[in-house]
Length: 446
Image (cartoon, rainbow, N blue to C red; front, side):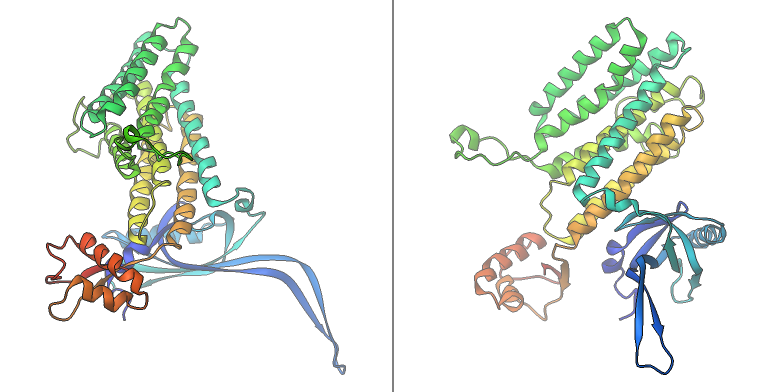
């Protein structure tokens, strides 16, 4: 089968990678690891010795694609990156950021049968110690990256609000931006089914906001205002986080409580983050409910509200990542879908932060780097999860058949699993009746 015969099955499996900041989609990657062994042969003697000169890491061989209407421009950008001298960072979707050099000339291939696509083949050699070994397991590395990301976001908002000298009018704009965040969160809280559980978070945020604005010291007030967004986002996500199982059976009252749904919470966090981000990126002109986007014409007067809202966007994304990490995925496609949404949200947040580089250089740069590190750690964690999950396949049964007959055909080796398999087919494909599969391909979990 040709590579692009089933593009729906290929594209969800591609992983984002980058070389010198130029992104492409990685199909596969391999690397050599072992010891550097030098073999010595003695002429005339049936004898050889081996000298061990140390560990061997690399080279790393990757194959990837650039896809899009601007694929030629993307390929030219990668061509310039391959021609640049010196070591650089390879953002590996499974191993994270690796400092390396281009070991051999890279190949960029165009094919008349693959329009809007260019193939990339390259080989890299790591230089220096591999920083991934000290990070730990994938989940702990992701949590560490999120902690650093939250600190960098709070630092950006604090630096913008407490900058000296700072006119009171500019500080007031930062205060107004915090009020905007609370109002927006309250609006979304009223739209959810768990609004009663989210309203205490709004009340707490308004109380913290009142205390912060009443503080006389400007630096203390700035730190308190900057801390409102992460506290609010954490309180918003709390009702959706799964609770640990109790050793004592639940009572009748406990059974009536709704079970936390991390999927709903992650979707809410991503929606709020996207709404906040649109207020910072003028190119996104979709209608935004609530207050109007910020006025981006006055760069100097726009710094405090821009930084505060950018920090709030990042805080919502952090909670979205934490919620997604608790979702019990049932298929690779589901995990890849959530991973794509999170990666896109982090990428857009990095775009927002990059726009602040000329106004708050050091805090914005720290936050931008933290966003990149979080994207790398998220890809590593999800790749490990995806590797343990079954895949959703599409099957076109010949003629009319029932869900039970298809389940018997696919899972007949395990009779105990046939009924559960048939129920999954009915639920997954929203069949009106299990006696008929209808027309078209049927999704099954394999």
